[in-house]
Each structure stands twice: as structure tokens, then as C-alpha cells.
Amino acid sequence: MIKISVLLIIFTVAISGCENMQAGEQVSETRLLLDTFCTITIHGAADDIDKLTDVMGRAFDICLEYEKLFSITIEGSDVWQINHAGGEPAAVSSQTIEVMRAGIEFGELSGGMFDITLGRLSRLWDFGGNKSVPDKAEIDAAQATVNYRQVNINGNFVHLENPDAWIDLGAIAKGYIADKIALYLAEQGVTSALIDLGGDIVTIGSRGDDKPWRLGIRAPFGSADEYIGVIEIVGASVVSSGIYERGFDESGVWYHHILDPGTGMPVISDIVSATVVADNAIIGEGLSTIVILAGSREAAALFERVPGFIGAVLVLENGEVQIFGDVRFAG
Amino acid sequence: MKSNRFWIIIFGAIILLSVIAVFIFARKQGDTVKIYQNGQLIHTGNLGMVSEPFNISVEFNGGTNIIAVEQGRIRVISANCFDGTCVRQGWHTGGLTPIVCLPNRLVITVEGKSDIDAVVG
Image (cartoon, rainbow over all chains, first blue to last red; front, top):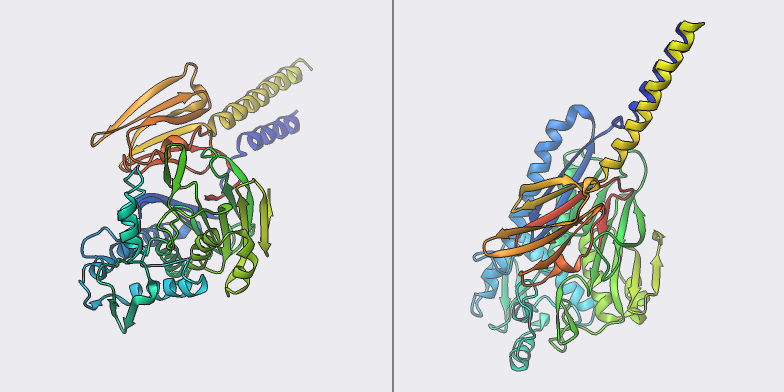
């Protein structure tokens, strides 16, 4: 009888205890930063939780520090200094120079479709705060200031040949910051982490139990929890751009935030969503925007030219899903 | 013999109650909704326990979001923010993407047992 009782007790405890913690602990925190929803998740040993919590706090501090450098709206930021230098060279941080150089490379790669001097246009459209199409004359005037070839970098000085031009690093800054946070975490000995800056994702290692990170790709124009499929990655970055993310309806037309420097208007593309897997997030962020600007016919040739590109998933306006490179995607 | 039957019934009842408790716990786990305003938790509840649909009005610095709550799902049905992204996000039932209204500093999360770690796009 005792044997039966013991077995029953063990069985009962086993059922009740099926939600036991796994061997590794997880620390996760979310904050509203960079005008988006940022989450950092770190896996580590239970006795390192205090240290991981400190590291997490510092990681968010890094995020804030970079936001103060790269913001187009924060008065006194490096970008603000460049934009208000009145045609004079402006002294900025080496980090800002690094992002600008990456932006100029993307400009070269895309034949000018990607342009960091889009600032006047992006502020005019102001997709974060505006709900109407600007006047044609204003669009034309802002579009005339766009030309990344008129940006001169000398040491830590940036000189805009056109004093009316404005820099906007918003298209790649989040990726750069995500990469820098990942670098900091790795330097602190973190071997499993996921940095998610509003959908710009960088992972370190696997998810802690030797399984890949599983990332859902949001369905364009779908509800918050609709996915078209899942990508599995280990120690890489995934970034999406889409014409559905930010914008507004006017007279039945959807005006989205990916602007064509050639027209000053939201680009007309056959791609509604581009998700790029790459060695780091700044590559993914730049490429995912450029491929939407370029269209699906240019995608393969574009991706081939970029070291650090791993794979991509494109969703076309007709609903077709195209896969490129070495990507583990299940739709 | 009578004693054995007594213990089998007792432990059988414990097992049955445990199984029921696990199912109830598991069902409730995916349903916790949290509504944050400017980083502060202002409402929390269990979506699985909603019997009658209702609306919540949340205001922040002159901005207003009307949130509809039904059994197992939640959404923003109207907002006077500039971009309307929160309304377009539609119903939320437990995925990882939070409903976010940046102009009104509103975030709605539903803590579900998702098999994915993050969402891109």
C-alpha cells in the first residue's frame, strides 16, 4: 500500500510541477525609447542575475546616449548640430561619423535611392505627427536639398555643401544602436541574448537551450498578432521594413514613410515588406529599406553585392512571398 | 482491503484535482493583459475571464484612446493620435507584438505562451 501511495504522490507532484523553470534564468526588460518599443532579453546562470540586471540597465543607457547623438529633433544632438551649422563644418562624435559613413555607402550601393540627406523631406512629411500630404511646392523645395554626394566628412567634422540640406539618420540609426548594445553585452560575457529595438533585432548565440531564436514576421497590414511565418536564427540580426508600418490614409490613398529621394513622395514599390537576415542590424536596416526602394526585380543583384547579407524574405503587393539566400523560414 | 480502496479514492481525487488545476492554470496563463501609460502599469486583467465586452477610455496629455475588451482579445477602437497605428493594429490575442500608441504613450501587452521569441515587421 505504501508503494502505491508513494507512486501516486510522485505522479501528482509531477503533474502540478510541470511549469518548473528551466536551467538558465532569463532577464527581460522593455522600455519606450527611440520612439518605439525596445526589449532586451538576456539568458544567464541564476547566480548572475544581479550582474545581468546591471548589464541590462547599462544597455538601455547606451540606447539613450546614442539617441541623444542621432536624433533629428533633439536640440543639441550631433545631427541637429550638422543641420543647423548654416553651411559651416560641424564637429561631431566618431559614432555619428561612423553611421554617416555607413549611410553614404548605402547611398553608393543604391545609386542614390538611399540618401541620408533626406532630412528636410522627412521632417516635412513628419509621419510621426502629421496626417496630410504636404504642398507640392514644399515637397519640391525639400526634395531639391537631397543629395548625399554634397556631404563632406573630414576627421570628425561634417560639412553640408548645401546649407539648406538636413541629415536624417533614422533609416539606419536603430540598427547601429542594436549592434552596439549587442557588442557591449558580448563584452560583458553574455552568451545568449536578444535585443529588439522596435523590430530591429540582434541576437547573441542561441536562445539558451541550444535552440535557435524564433522570430515571427508580421503580416503586412494584418493585426498585431498575425504572422506570415517564422525565421530561425542563431547569433545574427533580423530587420524588417515595410510600407504598412507608418503612414496615413488621405482620399483613399495610403501614404507611407519610405520616401523616394527622386520624387519626394512615398516610393511606389511592388514590395510591401522586406525582412533581411544579416551579420549585423545596420546592414539589415539599410538593405531592407533599399530593396523596397529598388523593387523585387533588383533584389537578388542587390543582395549579392553586400558582404554580411545572409538571407531575406520579401512580401510582394500581390501576396507572393520570395525567399533569398540562406534563411530558415517556415511560412 | 477497505483501507486500500479508501487511499486509492483519495489519491485519485488528488490527481483529478491536480489535472483540473493545471488546465485552469494553463488556460489563464495566456490571458493576462497589461495596459501601460508612459511606462506605468494602469490596468491589468485576465482576458479569459471577460464575460461581457466593455470599453476602457485612457487619457494622456489631451490624447484619448478607447480600448475594447472582449473575451480573449483586446484592441484600440479609436484614438485621437496623429498616426492611428494603434487602431490599425487590430485585435490582439496574445502575440508578442504589443499594441503601441506612441503619441499617447500607451502600450498594451498580452502575456501569452507564444512559441516565438520576438516579432519583426
